[in-house]
Structures are given as C-alpha cells and as structure tokens.
Image (cartoon, rainbow, N blue to C red; front, side):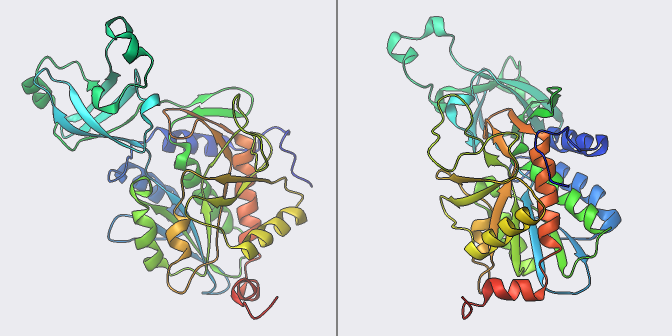
Length: 369
C-alpha cells in the first residue's frame, strides 16, 4: 500500500513516549551520559551493545551474513552552553556550543552541577536601558549571562556551580494535536529514536548484512564521535539518521531543493562539507519508488553531519544523509511532523534489507557504469 503523508500518523504511543524521553534528556557535547543510558536500555533487548573509548554507543545486529556492515549513526548531543565564569554578583558567563546568538535571550536552561540541576534564564539588559544604537543591533553573546537567582559568586558556588558546567535548553515536548510535535533537540534525538526503531524492526526481519546502530558523541563540537565510531564499526555503507532543515516558513527561499513538513523523508543532496555518494542516493530513491514512498530533496550550505567523517573512513564509505524536515533547527524548540519521522524509519528499513553483498559491490565498483 502506498505511503500517504496526509494519513494519520502510524507512530505508536510507545514510540511517541520514547521521542519525548529522548527529546527532554540532557546531553550537550561532552555530557551525553543520560542519552546514552536511554539508548542502551532500549537497544539491549535486540542488539549486542558496545562502546568506543570516547563514549559512542554501538548496537550490533547480525543478519544472514557478517558483511556488508551497514552503519546507521545518529548523534546523541544537542546544542547548549558551557559556564566559563561566575561574576561577583553570581551571574554565569558562558560559551555557546552550536547556538546562534539571536535565539539566546530570555530562554530557560537547565544547568547541570555536581549538586543537582539548576534552572536559569538568559539575561540581557532591559530594552529601556539600551541606547538607540544598541537597540538596532543584535546583542553580542559576551553581553549575555545566565541568571540562576544567586545573590553572589559565593552563593552560586554554594548552589553547586563550577566553571565548565554544561547548560542545556529547558523545553518539554508538546503535542500539537495534528501529528506535529514541538520539542527541543530533535537534532538529533529524532535520529536516535530512528536508530532504535530501525534496529527493533530488524530484529523481526530477515536482512542480508550486519547492522550497527550508533549513537555518536560531540557531533555539534567537531564530529568527534563520527571519527572514533567509524574506526570501531569499519562500515561498508553508512545511512546517517538526521533531521533536515525545513524551509517552508515565511521568508525562506524556495529555489529548488525545498523541504516541507508532511511531505515525506528528505534526502540531502549536499551540505557544507559532504557530497553524498550518488550511487547510494540513487539506490535509496529506487527503494522509495518501489514502496511508493514520497521523498523530498534538500541541501544544507551552512552545516554538516557525522557523514563527513564516516564517508572518508578507511578506503571510503558510501554515505547518505536523510531524515524528516524540521523547523527552527539550532534553537530551543523545533517542530517535526510525525508522518515524516515514521516514513523515514520505513525507508531506512526497506533500504537496509536490500543492501546485500551484490548491491554494495555495485556501489563501490567503479569499473562498472
């Protein structure tokens, strides 16, 4: 039966709860422990779990054959802040990890300290106190701070704050009631859930390969986990499970590669650092056509994914990046369509079950047309 993105979502209550749990989990670069533990708990019933030495989780599931080795990476970290200094008045100066300065003011945060979590707000001068020149310019990050309610530096320290403590956005998931979800960190907790759900389904399906579902660390700080986990997995093919940037909002340019919520999985044609393997792109497109799956094409000129380093591992790895279009990426809250998310899972599964030794050989044999 053809997939219809306008149909009611087939996402189960259990998967929706997993989306909520992983979205709301704390995990900026270098602080992925909570996310890793959730992934391990859900993957352990149907995969062999191991870790690399930086903390990427690797779930291995062997099908009919040990090879080809299919890597399905999704990064566990989200954008956030790191406390760099405590002022005499008890305010916390910070360094952003992935955040654009214009979306920072007046937002709530969770600061994770050795004495527990503290709620904070991004503070800036009130507009009444700004000069006219200051009002007409973006507020520099250096002029922002986190306010945890401390009266002094000593009180902030007594509350548990230390330089180097991480802060993640505070943003509970909200169901908009029409198959769309608001939540923080869909980049890339949606991908983490996709990995879990693909591995869960493969436990019920026959597949001619061995699949490695990987939760990587520190993607938002230099794709570090992509490097180490690629060495651990040594893949033959990689399908990067990521969200893509929707440009279906007012003011967006609609000049070709245009992705919308509710129109199916989006395949990335290129990003700032990676051109996907054309043969693998065509392979996935053929699979989508076989199963009557709607797909979109998108591009990303201002960022990249774990695929950048996975693709150049060893002698090279055919790599493609795909996922559900998502609004408001790299801010506190994003909007995602459940149908796009669910269809991405189905497309990944149907692609993986067709990636046998012969299919992978055709992807890398450049003596063939």
